[in-house]
Length: 76
Image 1 (spheres, rainbow, N blue to C red):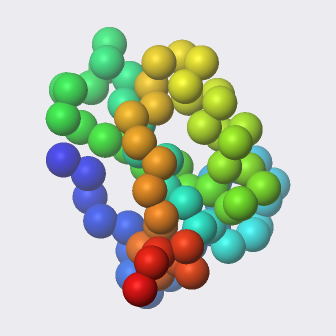
Image 2: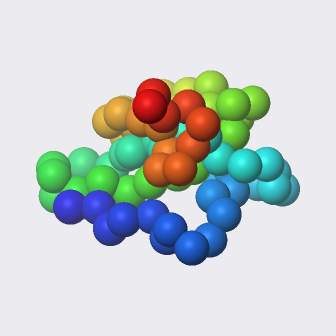
């Protein structure tokens, strides 16, 4: 089970050097290291969603991409 993202801190993209607001949560796990139900989260801005997701997907780690909490990508 994944721990919730901090509500009191602004969400920032996980891509190295990027300080843009995160709009997406890339939920993943490494099946060789983690239980099947465990999820780790990388945050992504719109620009880095594809590259971060591609990195995880190429290794078979990406499980889902969802709007980040508090993101304008969430449908109201």
